[in-house]
Amino acid sequence: MSAEASTITGGPRLRRTLTLWDLILYGVIVIQPVAPMSAFGVLSNRGHGHVVTAILIAMVAMLFTGISYGKMARAYPSAGSAFTYVAQEINPAVGYVTGWSMVMDYMLNPLICTIWCAQQSHEFAPGLPVWGWKIFFAVVFTMLNVRGIKTSARVNTAMAAGMSAVIIVVFVAAIRYIFGTPHSADPLYFTRPFYDPATFTWGNLFGCTSIAVLTYIGFDGISTLSEEAENPRRNIMYATVLTCLVIGVLSAAEVYIAQLVWPASQPFPNEDTAYVFAAARTWAPLFGIVGATLVVANFGSGLGAQIGAARLLYGMGRSNALPKSFFGSIDAKHHVPRNNVLFIGAVALIGSFLLTYDLGLNMLNFGALIAFMGVNAAAFLRYYWRAEEKKFWNLIPPVFGFIICLLLWLNLSRPAMKIGAVWMLVGIAFGVWKTRGFTNPLSFEVPPD
Image (cartoon, rainbow, N blue to C red; front, top):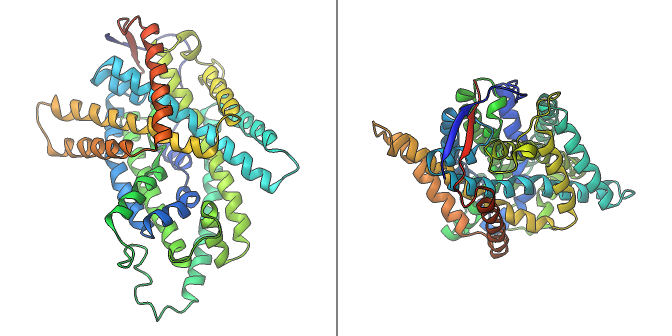
C-alpha cells in the first residue's frame, strides 16, 4: 500500500479564516473550561484527595503529546490530522487504522454530550421528555456546524465568555467561604489538596491521574482545523500547547478550591454532582448556576467535537480511505464538509438512544489513546530517527508521550477494550475491502498555506 501526495487545485475547499485566538477558544471549548467539575467526585474518591496533583501530572503528560501534534501539523497542515501524520510517516495502512480509531473517539464525543445535555436539561425542564431533548441537541449541533466554521467560532466565543463569568463567580464565592472559616486548628489545610500524608499512596495518585487525563481529551481536535487556520504551520503548534496549559492551570485551580471547601474526608451526597454540592456550600444559588453551566459546557464540547469528526472524515474521504464522493466533498456555499456534518449528527442522534452515558465515556479513551500513540511515533520518526541532526528535545516529548499513552490504554476498562476491539476489526475489514487488501494507493492532498 502506497501513498501519493498532491496539491489541491480545483473545486471548493476549506477556507482559511481561523486565527490563533479562534483555535485556542475551539480547543478550550471542546475540552471544556469546566472540564474537571463533572468528574470531581470520581477523582476525589479515587485519589483520596490529591486531585490537584493528579490534574497537574496529567497536564505534563498531555503536553508531550500536544507538542508532537503541533510539530506534525507544521509538516502536514491537513484536515486529516493523526490519520495523515501516521500514514505519511509510518505507513498508509497504519495511518488508516489510526484514523479509524479516531473516528470512534470523535463520534462518541458529540454522542455522549447529546445524552448528558438531554438528561440534565430534562431535570430543568421536565415538560419535554428526554428523547425530545436528544433530538433537540442533535439537530442544533448539526445546524450550527452546517452553517460554517466562523459561525461555530462565534458560538465558541460566546460560550467561553459565559462559562468564564460563572467560573469567576465560583472563585469569588469559594474565596469568601474559605477565608471566612477559621482553619487555625489545621495548619495543613491549604496544602492538603496537593499532598495529604494520611491518605497518600502512589497507587491512589496514579489511579486518579489515569482518570484525570480525561480532562484534556479533545485537544487534538485543533489539528483537524489545519486547513481552516491562518498560518497553520505556526498557529496549530501554539494553540495546542497553550490550550493544554490553559486547561491544566484552570482545572487545577477549580479542583483546589473545591477540595478546600469539601475535604476528601467528607463523603459526597452524590459522586456525579460532587462539584455542584461543593459550590452550593459556598453560596446556595450556585447549585443551579453550576448545573446549568455544565449543560452549556457539554453543549460546546459536542458542537466542537462534531466539527473535528467531520474534518477527520473529510481527510479520510479525500484520501480514498472512505468513499470519496460522499465523505470527500465540500459544500460550495459554506465551505464545510456538509455530508460529514449531517452523518455525524445522525450517528449522535441514533447512538444516544442505544448507548448509556457511562459506557460511552469509558469507550472514549480507546480511540483517542491509539491516535496519541500514533502521532507520538510519527513525530519520533520524522524529527529524531530520520533527522540528520539528533536533537535531544526532539526525542523526549514523543517517547514519553507514547509510553504514558500506552500505559493508560492498557488500563482501560474491559468493556471499553472489548467494544473497541470490535470497532477496530470492523474498520480493518472495511479498509481491506476498500483498498483491495491495502494495495490501492491513498492520495494525500497538501493544501496551500
